[in-house]
Length: 281
Image 1: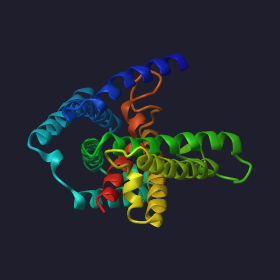
Image 2 (image 1 turned 135 degrees about the horizontal axis):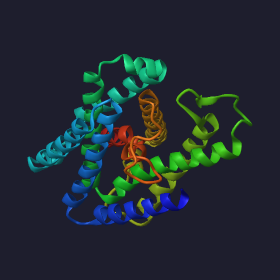
Image 3 (image 1 turned 90 degrees about the horizontal axis):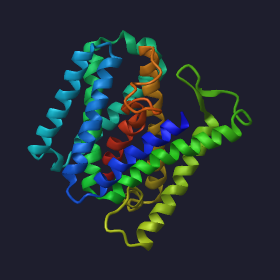
């Protein structure tokens, strides 16, 4: 399993890294469109749709993204949109985590299915606008999510059960602990200050999310970074809730050793739009 995970990860990096650094951002846009289209296919299946319907869902999603890009939609500023998407993520996630699988399944599939597609579309738009703002900005958001997850994992493994008596969300993701959350928050705070120093020291051409937040004062930097890290955890929990509701372990088997695309981007789905919201302040 470890060998399979490693091979898949290397293959993904071999595609993603050149696409990120390629001067023509349309290459990155094409890669992200294919990934999100695959996620749209997975989402339809998680909502009980047939393989044909799921395939149509993924293909339609890709066509809409390409048409939107062709019409210049990626180049437009969407300050109010990001505020609306961010507020929706916070409110809907709070309701879901409180109500659990039963609350989710009580919703009609005609609400759940298109709602998820809208969230994927917002994340697709956010990641492409983030790339347009510079590789430094894009990576600063993505690494924040990875740091929150990695720091939480290692902190939870080493301190789990020593300081807190309960899991974070035992009915949704039994492996997550409050120790891990605290470790993840500390990790992203350290990351923020180091990255901001690097921006200044190396005179980066494009600002990171940390430098942008820091320009509005230290309090906003601290609150903003912790908020983004917390929402990355929420994204992971919400996707776990969806999978439990559907009775599956992974969103698909598209990425051997890693599950599906949704399993890899779940924490980024709320974080990217929220980062765009904070960056537009």
